[in-house]
Image (cartoon, rainbow, N blue to C red):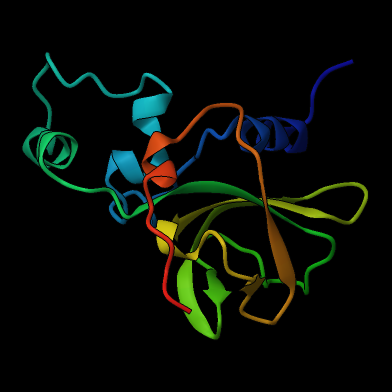
Length: 150
């Protein structure tokens, strides 16, 4: 049987591969979307717009945000849309990049979050709890995140 568009979107989310739209394509540097772990960035060759910023982040910077896979058991209509905030302790911790409601009612998402918030209780703006799900690849930058003082 042929795959549906929803199947395609779910497969991208499960694989940790973000899709941007015209409204979001200028909001993130590629490293925030984990492209360096998907072989989507080559740091030693090529010439492209933004190359200096990307190389500077790679060689000098410390990445403080990256792409996470999230899931909620339910979500209010419109609470999980691209650009919607993900909250931690009443403060914005990041933004939804992609999302899809699955047949079982759960909502699967990719969101760019601050590494410092990965151990916090996360919700959508309407208070719907979300949990971090594993990606099929490592994101070493997260492993070096120091614990926050509580």
